[in-house]
Image (cartoon, rainbow, N blue to C red; front, side, top):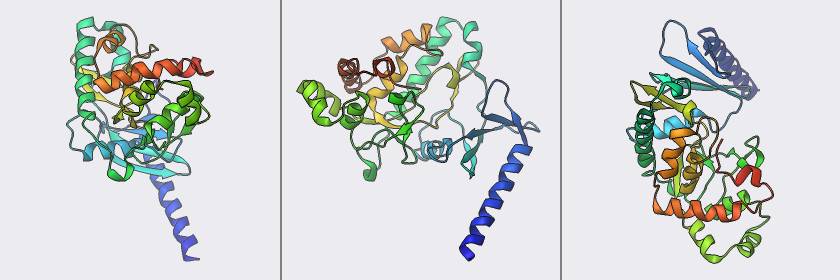
Length: 284
């Protein structure tokens, strides 16, 4: 009985939290799940239809590392009936997508270089011993959107790098993957170190101010992946990743292990029946 009463009180408390959040905010124009505060409060609310792998988990983790990277600060997060409400500071500046046409190639390259500095810092992060080896795993330890299913489904964490790639290659088992690829390819893939990756560094998630990087947003699907995953995400031509920006990343040299695994992965991804999805670099 007391347990039921406590659950109901918690639900009622979260209901009033949600009511307060909605009452103090309004939708941000041009977005479907971002709200801004009235009274010039420099915060935003991200509304997400999920209860795991939220923006809050990623921001909390990244700030705990002590890395000096330009990301929002977490203010508060709550869940009400399957929806997460995450309040974070608003990064000053403008979305790069909104001003990309007015930016010179030199400015775009400058911002890309500053983003690469952030990636180098992320590259220094290491998994906790209790999670060592797990991939496609969020900062909260949960699954992530799956490229094999057009990112409409979620999967993971996978217990090893090679098992994740077997999944992405549409192999029914590791034995099938091993029988279809030479030993050297598999060794290169297995040796790919696990790193913390932002899977969607397109213009939409880059905030610019005075011709420089002001911040990177949308960390909710970031997590632990093979290092070559970051290479794939940066070299996938698509809306928000084209022109000078794409050319920068096509020429940029990631770590030797990441570049080797990136090249090796393409040798078997193109054999998959799902090649229209995953033969291209992986990201959202």
